Image 1 (spheres, helix red, strand yellow):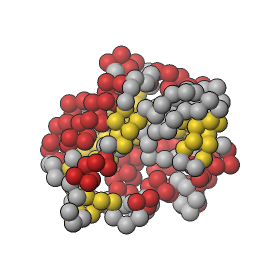
Image 2: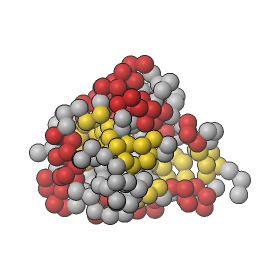
Image 3: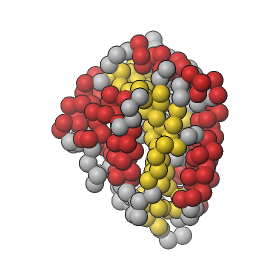
Image 4: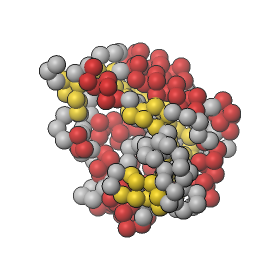
Length: 254
């Protein structure tokens, strides 16, 4: 039985987290899936937004057992990410981590059992993420890079693993990858970018060891959607500095 730990970095926007968890609970972590794969949630709540940490915790507990919660005094996305992964890495029985930031909608059913079967059949497949892009007949374009279809999933080319293998989209991740990578992260830089060129050298060596895939099948539309941008506009919040290298939030003038 494969125990799964969900790592969620959240902010004070309970309505967004509720939408995220409701769609993933309904479409991926179904009752049947949870009978096969016991699942618990690790939750970081950064103090950015207009809700309360209590309301965010209550929403999380309505959908999953919550095994650890952190409510820091100041927001920091890198520190939130690091804490969630380091905490997950200490789990004694979990075989997988599902990384799920708080602002994604899962728009249709996905078989968790099929995803796990695929990753278990491919011993060096470290990460299998859900698709945010249209699945072509022979490849899926992820930003400016094409991932070829290999008959099971869309695979990041070996020579581009450090450029595009890992991203922060909702992903099923082998626990070995998390245990090896988490201690190598730095608390001052955008965590996603640390897995790419310019990141810590030891972390990049770890990244290069693994294969990376995007779940899906030819001809299928995207299955996940970012639902955080509208909230940011409505609440006059923005990612401070460069959006690609974001580490914190800031309030902007309406």
